[in-house]
Length: 178
Image 1: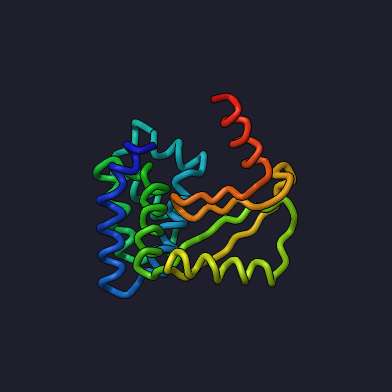
Image 2 (image 1 turned 135 degrees about the horizontal axis):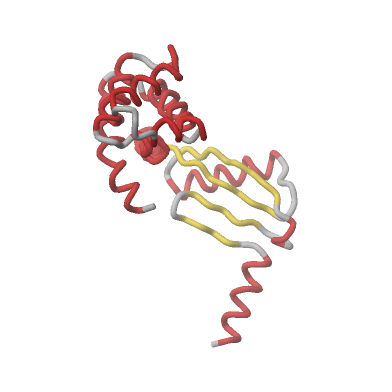
């Protein structure tokens, strides 16, 4: 996975810099998201791996499938990826692009997994606290997992805060083993 990210990084950076320079971050984000989804389709995977097709044929087919959802610049971007045999990297490129975009916009997606449903008031309060701690606008995504027993697990990028009962029991067990 790290190798794919390394290969995808220059393409994602180039796409981001172009989109930023032309104030098209939202458009490029949507188009790269679509391209990533199309590249993962089973039928498209077969097309991309077909040895009888040239790289230009693969790019043309890919762009035709997406139709008018892509502007000329994204079509050219797909062509460049195909020429370098990198179309399969589109999911990683889209992911990196979103990270660059979030960094630019000073936003962060936060996943909150709780043992029980959080009320809107609790979610708002948690979002405000996390926003202050992370110095970013927080987009909260809440989910439930009864196996936590109680408490919450918060994931924001590389940051993980485990305040669940299950996590505390696991830490206690580890301490008792050592």
